[in-house]
Length: 154
Image 1 (tube, helix red, strand yellow):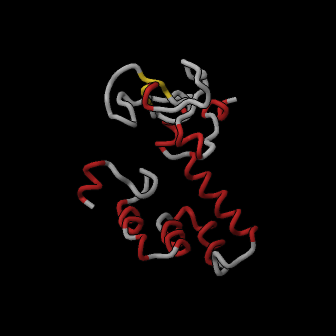
Image 2: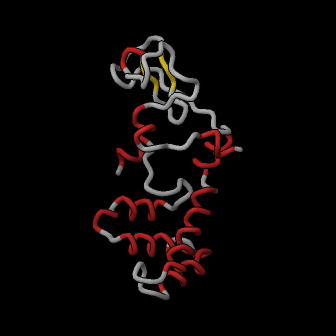
């Protein structure tokens, strides 16, 4: 855990108490429902969602409760510092300096949906054209059908 602390690795929102970070660190031995219960229990202002979660046998309940819990988690996630910082960038991505394939500098092509960059010779384009399209996506983003980042702002 000290190593994670030095590298800045967190297992929950940065605003989360250290005791909750410890619980999330050991989450491998806990079920998802138990992690949620411990997370909700960590802050006395979250009693409403905690009561909702403990009033049923979560996750073996109806979709209404599961959606309510998920919506609450999304709201908490959206107001965390990391997400606020990302949204403040207005979708601008800080691209890497080295090619993801060969790990070298040079003239690089930037992915429009993630920080990855590649040399033209290190990737295979769909057609034999010399230049990639302006909205080029790296193979990982294309495979996982990652949505265009700037569409979040429109």
